[in-house]
Image 1: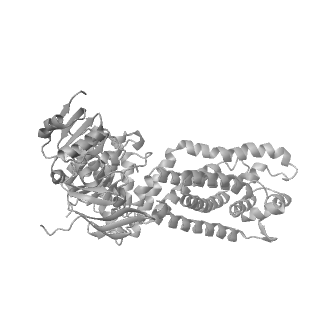
Image 2: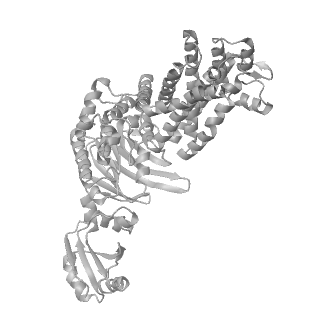
Image 3: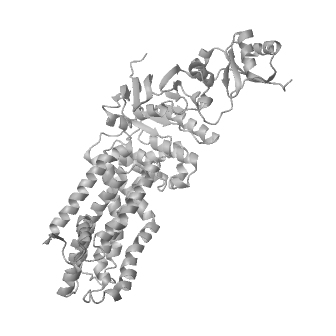
Length: 284
Length: 329
């Protein structure tokens, strides 16, 4: 018989205890994130650089072709996606560090489903991405995007969806790579190409044939496009500017509906999350 | 014997990794409230055995039950009843002591009404009450280990696994850890299974199993094991070990073992043997020590190698009963 210490018996697991475990892991992630002010600040450097340094810098070159729309306004939705993507990568790296530093073992032996741990970890990563996303949304005005509540709510909704999908991708890469150096090199190889090929920084029509094809294969393309269409529905731009700067993504000439794009992003996110959960136990 | 079932029951347990058999048919039982030690060099299979018992690794063969549940078939029931302190640190260094414990409470779904009190209680047990809101990274190595022990105890496990709990700690912290293990046993009746390759630490266990190359070579209380050697160990350094070993064989019928660059023989009455040694051995003797049997002798006796040679761990000061020393001729 064990000397039962009052109230410390570990109950059988239930959906409620799983939820609590996931929330505990989430809280840990958020505590670490909010604690790391430097990360919050440095994560904003690149998006701000693109919006307020690169875009105005290129403005003079682009003036004739943007039909009066500021380049930073054009780039705003792409930069929002890029920020989600970068943040998810940093969070995924923290999962790799958890494994390297041994903390994952504390999670691995707990009487909790792997999926609860992965979901808690993912929820923490999504929260971190959204904190940065909100700060960037606050910069809409200076970027020439109106503070329209409907627009901002819509953009935030899209950010949630994108954050979930890219976080799932990051966690999957973290669980399938066995060592930190492998993870780092995979991420180094992916982080910029995925952004550059997605059309976050340029319109997706009139690309050279090979680039058009690769662009359509980049999942981030289908996250940037709905966001850009939403922004262009709320800014003053001529029809010519709309056609030049925010053409819909097409498949062999067929404009892909926004709903299908979002479904695609969600489905990919769910599939990658499933792989991550399956792999997680073995990685621990 | 009381009809209580053992806390840990291991029968013919094996674990192979590809061609390598890390654990080869291990059997033992640990009674409730007992402090049981697995003693052996690195790579002997101690950690693998612990990993199987705490459900992190599936056994290749045999059976193991912990707290009454099968580790392979009822892993979840086992996990709820065990605490673990790993060989390598597993704290989140960025979180405070209390935050680390709170996350643990969430993972184990402890009653929220008592969590705060319980955190205070376990922190007090390991004398970290005042560090409650310090980040783990601000704590010394010894304090971190104590915090890990506190965390392992938070959910009042029936069985606590300690994998090399004092490795890398200074003597003071090691003594403190042992103090906690004992008070734990007294206060909460926890069964403790620990691995160690420190002999002086194994001496403090109620019973130990000596593990070598994946097998248990001896099992019993430290006293019984030492008594089973039945002889003192006489260690001598000589000018010519080969000649001395031959002479020991010819004159005294003793087979000398080479350990730590010296010759060791086991004789029934060590003190009485030394004068005869000087009288009859032709080889120059530089020093002689006589020691009562230690667990290292037990290890030597059952495995044919010194634990310190089998392992590269830093040597520990032997528990010498008497030292005879003499400068070379």
